[in-house]
Length: 258
Figure 1 (cartoon, rainbow, N blue to C red):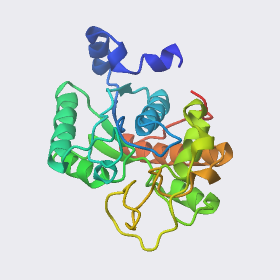
Figure 2: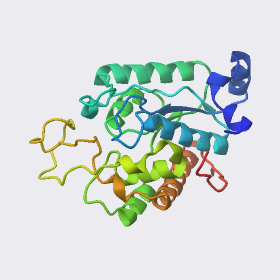
Figure 3: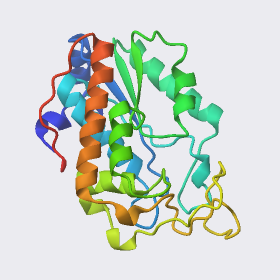
Figure 4: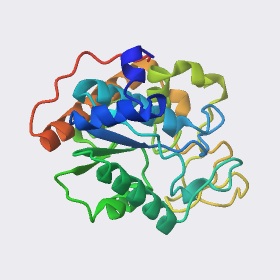
C-alpha cells in the first residue's frame, strides 16, 4: 500500500494531522465490513473488511477523503451457526453506526460517505443515518449499483448465489488473490426452495443447508470475472459520489492488486 493511501486512514495519523485535514474540508469515508463472518472454506472471516477497505482506499484516492476505522461488527444473523461468526442485534448495530457517524460529523467533517459491503446491513444502516442531513451523509451500497447488477447478470454461471459465491470469490481473486484458497471452494447444494433465514452447516434437511457456508458456486469464480465486477463497482461509486459532491469524481485506471 502506497504512502499516499496510508495517509488516508486516520488510525495511522496523529490527531493534529487529522485536525488539519478536516479543517481543509476533506470528506470522510466510514467503511462497514465484517471481520468475523464466515465465507465458506475458501475465504477468510474478514473478507468483507478486506473489500470495504480496498474500495474505501480507491474512493479516498479519487476524492481526497479521510478513512475512519472500519465497523467490523454488524447485523449478520444468517451466519451465526458457523464458528467465529458474530452478529449484533439490529438495534445495537443501528445505534453503533449512528453514534459513530454523529461523532464524525460533530468533529467538523462536512461530507460523510458510509461504504457498506453488507446485504442484511443495508436497511439497518439506512435507519441509522435517517436523522442526518442527506446533503451531508450518503449511504454507498457497494453491490447495489446498476453497472454491478448488469455485469453480474452477464457473467454469472451459477444458478443461485449471494454469499461466498461465484461473484464474491471472483472479486477476491481480483483484489486479494493471496487470501483465496480456490482448491477448498465448495458449492452449496441445489436449492429445493429459497427460504430467507440462517444458513446451517449441520441440518441437512434445511432448505438453507450449506456444509461449507457458501451460498452459490464459488468453483466458477475467475480473476477476469472479478476484474469486470471491480470496474463496474468503481463506476457505480463514482456516479454516487459525483452526485453527492455535485461534481465529477475523476478516477484513474483501477488497480486490482493493492
